Image (cartoon, rainbow, N blue to C red):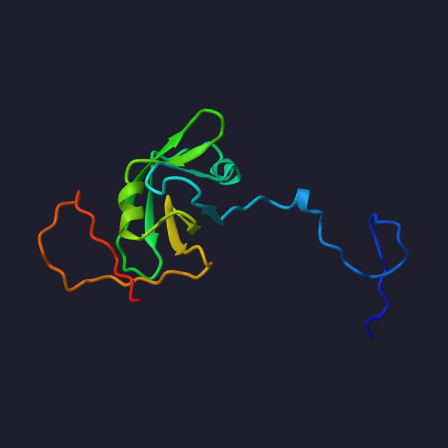
Length: 157
């Protein structure tokens, strides 16, 4: 017959004898930054600084470009150049303006990013009332467009 008593081994926190299992303190957990947001307080069309913790998460990989995908707006990837300032700060630069125009990023917007790996970030835009803007792709438009043209996703409201 198996024993039903439990013994406590190892170092405890010295707070009595219980069988509670405490999680490790936050400082010992691995740092995984997969989601973050920025608030647009200044010109929405100029380069945007991403959180330093996300830049640190990339751990020296420093991609020259990232690919933005608007959530619920088809498979299109928007190529955006990335700048690093040598002090651990990371910025979305060339290409951000086109993405911002196409997705209605404006003053007071909250922009949510989710890192999908392989330099791809899925993006959701929330307006100043904290409501998400939903878009859909206009796949029926077959006009010949150069990559320099901005083809916006369409806001259904």
